[in-house]
Amino acid sequence: MIHTLAESLTQMEARLQIDWVLVNACWQFALWGCGSLLLAEILRDSYHALCHQVNWLAKWHNKHHMAYRRDLSVVSLKAYQESQLYHDILESSLLILVLTVIALVIPQTGLWLGVAYACSFLGGASLRYFQGTIDTDYNHLPGPLQTIPTVWWVNRSYHWRHHFDDVNAYYSGVFSLVDKVLGTGLSLKGKTIALTGASGALGQALTAELLKHNAKVIALTTNPDKLATDAGVKIISWQLGNEDELKNSLEKVDILIINHGVNVYTNRTPAAINSSYEVNTFSALRLMDIFISTVTGPQAKATKEIWVNTSEAEVSPALSPLYELSKRTLGNLVTLKRLDNDCVIRKLILGPFKSQLNPYGVMSPQQVSRAILFLARRDFRNIIVTINPLTYVLFPWKEISTWFYYRSFSKTVNKPDIAS
Image 1 (cartoon, helix red, strand yellow):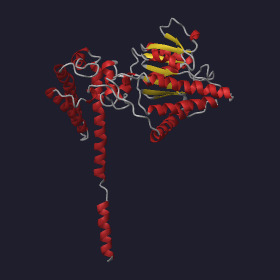
Image 2 (cartoon, rainbow, N blue to C red):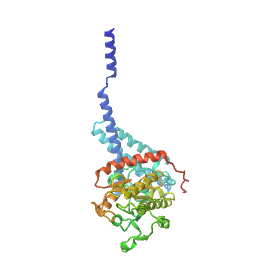
Image 3 (cartoon, rainbow, N blue to C red):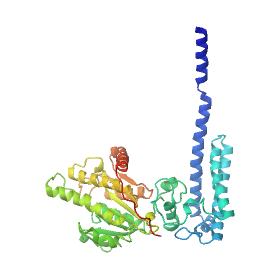
């Protein structure tokens, strides 16, 4: 009896024994396979970028751009088929060739997954060339853009910007890693950018940096006398509480940067409370709502953006309770607004920089401005610029948990489709 039981236990142990050789082989295949997929996308997007920099490559690639109208409908069937032959089929064939050579040189089975992935692009391009159908050309389907550009995965709105916003940006095809590395995830060239708080230290520094990137800047200020009139910047005066008067000016604005604010420091009088919330929270909220009402038209979702300076007071003390309370409220309202996906909304989570609001700041507004644009051009939606390492840890957790809570327990009415 005991002998039989021992044999049964031995047999069960043998059955349950893990084949570590097999497990290791599976892990290697998975890791090399994922790496090959990543490599395929990097190579494909890098080739795309080169097509806009090297003249003899641009000759073939331009056929791709010439095939589409502004609504992504094709100019003609012949032009579309030529674009597939001289761009998509050529690109896919070169990608297969390079990945095959790599898979032959490095003896890892997982690398052939990248080759198969590249073959899928060639297969789709071949079908489109021979049959003239666009059903599998997902980023070029015609019609109005219903969604905002996504952060990591390339959708129609993101790719539309490559064709009709700036051809020398937005190179990525499936996910936007290459654009984030190159700083081509957002083009500021030719953009009309309106900026509140333009007479402040950060406002003036941001204006100077935006002009370096060939943007058209509109300075929205309550203190127009503090701004130079010969800097190539359009100045519009406005008053707190009269945000509605700015609607006509905001109609043609691509990016609205909400940067104005007030700091009452240790004051906690009723007037200080009212001032803090009126300037830091409710004025910003009204401007957001007015700008969102201008996001109309078939391509507006791809081009319109709001940047809001909420400050790292969202998660860190600022030694000014009312500044913290009003800015945290603004930050939470921005998170709530993002759920509607009306347009891209970026948060500027800025640490202490020297200004009228904070004469003891340790960063310069010029440094902060350069960092903001560096991250914005890489399509960061939460732009953190601070010397406090805790903010980089605390803010993402705060933002994710707040977003999840608001998404679970709030809703909005359905909006009508955008007219074409």
